[in-house]
Amino acid sequence: EGRVEETKRQRDLGVFLRQRVAQAFREGENTPYPRLKETNFTGVTVEDCKMILSTDILKQMEDMKKGTWRKLREKFYAKKPEEDLK
Image (cartoon, rainbow, N blue to C red):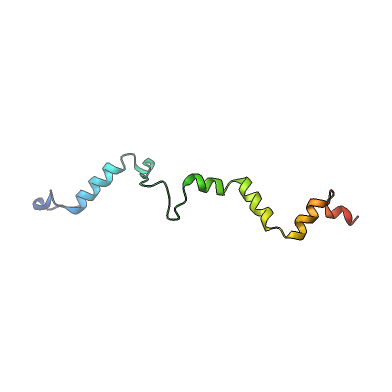
């Protein structure tokens, strides 16, 4: 603790802040930050984020990116296009 003037012992901002931080984070780095809301700046909840980033949804997104011709070819061809070249 730094030097504190005796006349400011009860009014020192640095002492006050150190005491408040020590109260809020009793376990140091292991103390979790309290969440005031269940959303972030986008308004999306944690559950929605997990769903959006799930493997199934990402697979569906990849399928949506495929072109129409490729989708039709995959739908109607039972064998892979590489087998046609042999």
